[in-house]
Length: 606
Image (cartoon, rainbow, N blue to C red; front, side, top):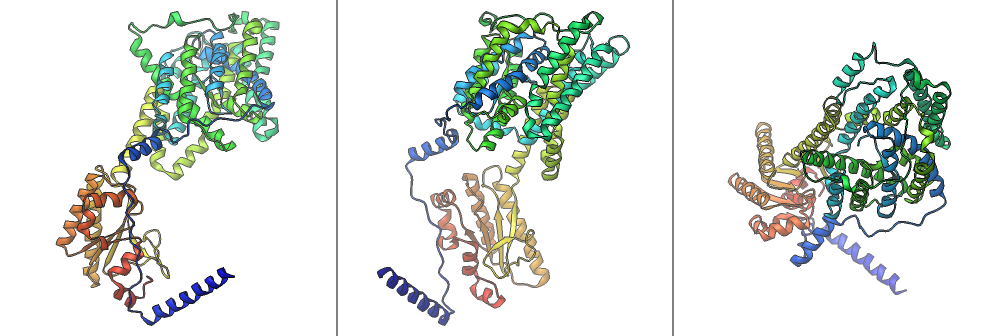
């Protein structure tokens, strides 16, 4: 009852207020002032900044318990990983057992340390101690945000170039060539292929490779057309290996020049601690390659992890991923493994198989362990051509034409980074491609920071909203007032540009006013909603802008500066110079206070 009476009294007061305002049109509207945030303790402010910068990902978050789906997923990805591992070892010019080693130890480490539920660990097509050290260091120092300097466009181009490079490398096994270049650029590879065309190609090998590649691509096509048949491309490589091995064994095609795997060492990973040397002529080269490989592996794994985390609606701990991936590569380097990371093909199969946690990696490791212990002799007659076909079918999907086209439509500068990374990898090397991608991405970032966007705002008809006149052609400029919006923080790198750009806007507007005979500009309103921060150079630039406007007899007015900005404006006394009565909560309030009579005459909404 009392609340009803109270509501009625409030309603009556609102009616009286409305009547009063209508009977006194000369009274100015009430204007809200910009609030100055309370002073914070320096230590607390520093602590909050550090936490947001380095620990924003909540590293103590745990993940859920395992389910039966992990058992099925682990068995499924094991059937995919075993033939892939043998092929990837060949790609790295290593004995085939080293590929299997890398799918035994690293997945076990990751299962206990990683945060992704879907990533399946193993050696990958793009890639020992230095890689792990790089990854762990980035994780412990909470520098996960550095990976974000590799833009999506750069990664698309880089992965596409790497896929082409890897596929071309497989022509050695696919065509049965014995003497093949060790260089990776497309010119050297194609020269090596055609130079051996008359005497180095083996037709039996080509038939085996082409037949099985067609089968694998068809299996992939079936899996894409019907998601329920995801297991078809998953077991395709294993079926290919079984069929081709049986065929070569029965026909003894190895005696006709078909190259085979031959011997695969039985047993689990031997220790390789005694083979780790931290001196000698190759130390610096090893460190350089290891750091690059570590960054690539890290970028790929986190990109894959984020993809599936988004699909299942959980958070990926970037720094935890770095520590997990780095630790597994450091431990792996002591157990005869080479660089391992998240594999997209295996992770996709893992996801489709219904995995719930990283326990599926443990199941896969157990299957690989059993293979190393008991089944390696069965792969003796496996032809190299089938391994080449498996790798080609695995990497062909990394060339993402749809993504490249979308990048072209959205941002031409991003497309330049994508193409630069692609051609850098294809025509030079992985390192050059990565360098080009990072360089172009950083150049774009610097360009956006040093040359931020600004816009002239106008009043949207029948509202108190002020928007970019280029985006809203119906928006009308306010006579005697120039409203400019700055769309970035104001730092030393762009403060001078922003000041000069605002003055150029003002000069252009004054020229238009002089030609049209409209009222002279008396107020310059700077809309500061997008300005998240300002440094001492920015304050100095605003002071210079204020003095330049004073000489022109134009009043500087600020609209909606944020808490960080308004705090610094008061700390520097710039707020007092401009006048606290010239700092407003909204552009509409600022315009209403600058020229209320003029607005009424022109019919503008306030």
